Image (cartoon, rainbow, N blue to C red; front, side, top):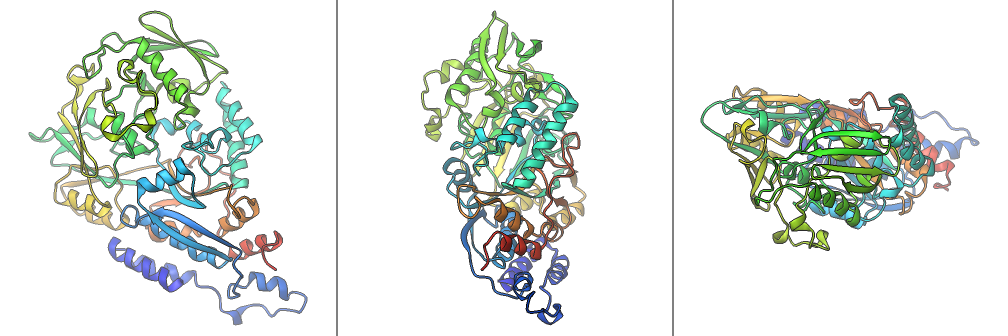
Length: 556
């Protein structure tokens, strides 16, 4: 197995031009020779057999480990094979299943038909508040399509989740959030593998004034507003190996779906590049008391089909998402007890409990839907692709979407921000893999990358005068999620042991070429207000892993 892994890593290294880095790192992890072991006494022999890396351990579990294909994300792909090897040394027979991304997401979230999955959560500006990432472990999110497919349910964690969301005092809320991270760290339903730097690039001969944002780098909702053409070109072309899982706003559960849709749907509030709430469809907002929020709607908005945007559309939207119990948004709206139209300009939200981050989390997340289109759709999740409405009121208007090939949006001339745009169109070219995106950048087929550069591509991009490389911090994370409804992951001792058998330093040093850091908590260190630095780390220690399994009775 080690020979196979070295071969895979060598191939990846050649593709990413980091062969020098890969070979010695693998040598460091070779098991110690048996003749270097301390001589065992008869009384110590059984315990030493558990700790000896050369002893073959009887298989006690067989599992399938889902990950992305190599072309889509070679880092997650290779990380899965690293995990396969070290877990195999502990007695877990791992079958790595590289899976096309949309199929992986459907299997993971919508079907929950998995043993363990290597996946990721993208950092977005609206996720700097901890509500989203903490919600991925909330017991109320375990239904099909919910954000907690691993089925982690802990009464103390869930109680703290409710307390933190209702807590107006920042210091006290931070304490609750850090306590939640401590619980998750100890129970380890999800092993956060690593945080990866967002390294992207753009063609400085075509455009300038790109907006850089933590977690989103250049492919954010402000770049189209601010970017300025250097010459006559007014179509901003972006390359990505990923496309929306769907453009159905009642079904999309990936960042790639929403990064596309958020430009043609308006929200009541948009968050600035510094995560500050800015008036958008809502001209203003206010909280008369702890459980009431009022918004005043702008009076100059129309949908792309010419119909006016009204307070009735706003009420309908929030009620509709609640009625449909759309799992992806439920953590942001489930506290809404009632929406009330006060007058032609005002909508009032009545909450069942205080929720301090309501503007930043709820009002900044939910896309305003046209009632006259969606009111007659009873089962929105079941819409065929050709039947999905694409009418919003956003600053850009849906133009075309050729699945697997091309997406485009054009500036909506009747939007209140239309005059702020120096571009006319935003085009996304969909490539088969990250290498295709980089080739498109080099040949100037695209102006910028939506997807991060692979480690070996970065020095090549830096050597090109017409390219500018941008390194943005990320607060998203890549994780290995256990299905707690599947043996042996229902046992926290197994989860802890297997967490000790993941060499995160090697993943970061070899696969990421050092451009990232080992993972600990679902709240990243780059989000210091909320991050708990004392979360359990589970350092790579095969002897400790074996001892935990032995103490738990998994070895005879």
